[in-house]
Length: 123
Image: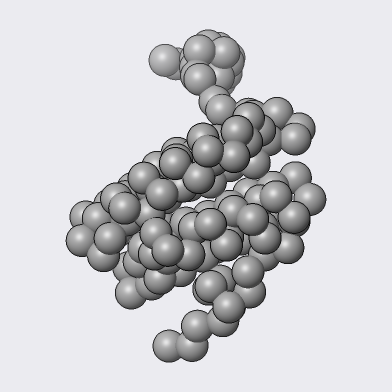
């Protein structure tokens, strides 16, 4: 590469080939932190409970996925719920037992469960 034009051409080619998740307008995304710290703190049962609850309720507009480190290891297990109306809400110290309440209140009724969010915890 010797010119700015060549660099721009490479950039355009790369952008055209990348696979970016964009979702749909009404889709709700639930991301579970599944790095080593999350798994050690109990993220796997949380992920399983989320998938079970979403499936049981037939919530077709909800996508449950996992990610690596979210960066707040002291608060694991961590889940992030992103909705078009509310944006991203981060839940911390989540257990499988809390999932039905979080799904009912936040995902179905659109009201975050404040006492489980990161804003409710102090260091």
